Image (tube, rainbow, N blue to C red; front, side):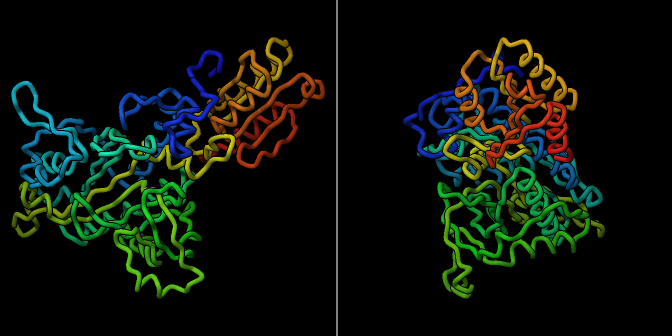
Length: 445
């Protein structure tokens, strides 16, 4: 991509309506545009980040053995009446009547629809276990949408649903999802802490939220500081191994970590005082086990090995894909702009031409650009006829992890400058070495 041909409507001033860092930088970096309260268009760079996050989610879901599909945004109200949630869900649900006077709704979640799909096609225990998921737009009519994509009305979410014969099997699915989520968040450069939470309108007794610590978080959280030392890393887990998945769950949930909704002061005070932490967190995902809450009223049953028809045990698991864009910015920024982790950056590297129109610098930039593209990477080449300061400010604002700066003085010595956005450190090297370094950084990411 050449910046002279790209649509990147950056803003120099902070928008008055933006109250938190992520909202401010997403607007200034030309990632989103508000169309209505809590509803945004995703402009090209924002859309690229959104799709990078979605791709990581897909890869880790498929690694865990989960099957992708796609359900519609609009749902018939009768399914929700079957489960008993239509009247209970409240005013956050956007209810619609179509031209034939049929009651519809814009889906806030998909437990009813996935249960209807399952009951129509699965009837034997031999088809279990099964986990289906999709990534789809949802709508919840927040009374006060704010903080940009962090608390919007329309949002992009991965929601998955497991179907199992027994509670034991369904709890293994719960553990399996916890493992897959830890891998997912770490690949995005985030530490998301699983915390005991309240199930809300989804229902069920077992649930954990995954929260990223940030001062702008909507939830007050209480935790043992030891939990922030835990890393999943690159360990290889067999998702069919019940004991291995359970061990990971115990490792990451044995220390105290709860949201304000489930906080127990007496238990919290048993932790050594030096390790007690009170902070704020951003919810980026949640997993639930709710047993037969939906399968019983909706008739989602299978015949077991004894010939008996029994309701399946279920759970659901969500990751806020669009919310993660804001959460990553909240966790990774400075006073100049965004600092994207390599796993989710919209472009792998920025190329800054310090003297546009100079044959040598133009040629060197074109060669670096072509070499990075040939390596399967996506650089963003700032070929605009702008002063150097403006180009550096744009690169800092949009937060690409690495920048290659090309100018006549450096080229005279056969060198370009490679700069880390996170540390600010720069190093002079040959253009070939800079390309090789960028290729090495992204290998395996």
